[in-house]
Image (cartoon, rainbow, N blue to C red; front, side, top):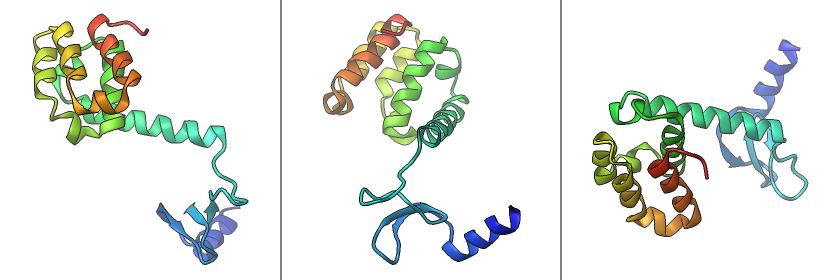
Length: 139
């Protein structure tokens, strides 16, 4: 099997980002056609694998910050949700929210999360995440 895998990688090429193949189909990895027109897309297991990797990455990015590592699991999950959606760089611009988290003022932290362009853009998602920050429970 190893020989076949190596051969397919060599024949198809390997790309870490989506690209258009020679026929114009949206493709990822080693020739995986994910295009709507006859492509395989991703299986549920593959989607879950990618999502778990992304959640693990967000956790690793946030873990060094005391304001994150000292939170309970639900509040950490709320911040991971925001990091997943915004990216770490944009999340770190929530200075007032982070200050409130450091002071364990979860009501203010939730209010600061909601007082943002992000909250206006994502709507109900922000309300749910802010509730998790404020109350420390899943809705």
